[in-house]
Length: 418
Ligand SMILES: [Zn+2]
Image 1 (cartoon, protein in one colour):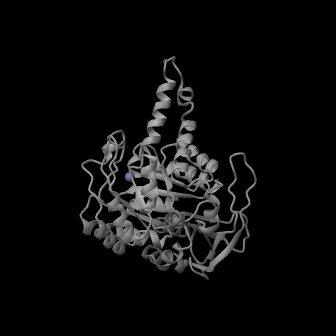
Image 2: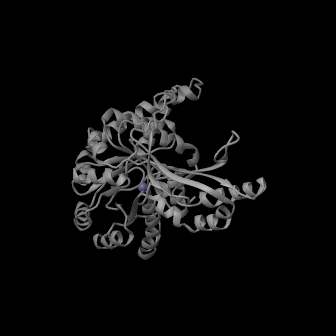
Image 3: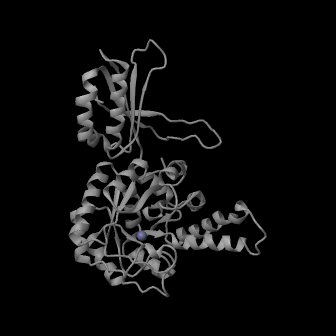
């Protein structure tokens, strides 16, 4: 249950004058530090997976751990794909378990930014996911993250922002008002007048990128003027690196574990500080009551075949894997056959969809229609097809192997469709 709809989470923050931290994570130390800090502070939290970091770790490999941590957290969590650069990367992020995506076409021209972001927003909303856009450009300052954002920043214009939000349908907007990605150069001068105008015209949650290293007063004014999500990575990266450097003084030939000692603890303390500073501490209970949970749907199909060879069935299954896996919001495709004979039904499909919203798009997608019409329906009969969503609470077994308690309810009966 604690994986919740990010739109609801941010709207709550926006209307109650606080901001939720979107903390960039690059490994399990960061993941554990973020989630335990949130639980300690009873704070909602956003786990940020930044696309430009994927050259340093395997996005597909870390996502099962991220999702496991989010679903087992006792505070509300959203999983956000940050600075996505294409429609394909947004589809991949949702299919891997993100329930929010950012489309960053901020370096493109205004019309191209709108077209590309609208394309992603239509797809993501059909999957039930939240969408963040960026208008203006937040450039790089100093530090390891800065080089990924070359050139000077471009401030967001309020009138353009209004047209951009109306035409793209984004749920929240990253604005450029003076911050930089990476470390700030000296004391950051923020354009609060511009932020106020944007907020007055838009009335939706605004996002601050380059949120590291501002003063308490600056954060306070930002939040009062519509900032409801603050991205933070550089401060965490620097704190982790400082801890490692101090572990290596003096260099006594320490191994990996001793070198990394204390990294997670120092990250957690910094994140707790942010949660108190931004006002999200103590808000978890309200969010859990007021926000929609984010739950996958299990689509179950059992069927028999008629008048075809085993090879033909296998070919149909192989094609089904290929066709269904590319549909946005399809997270997993499993095909199998009964291990005990005789069985009333000999074959099954299990298709996991990211969210109930995906069902309609799934059944109308050209890949689905072509596959069912040309490959599936001609050789199958006697089909039963039902979609299930987990009842609350859906408990995933923890690492200690405690028993799971996942019950389910039917949310849709698809008759004899696949
Ligand atoms: Zn950013």
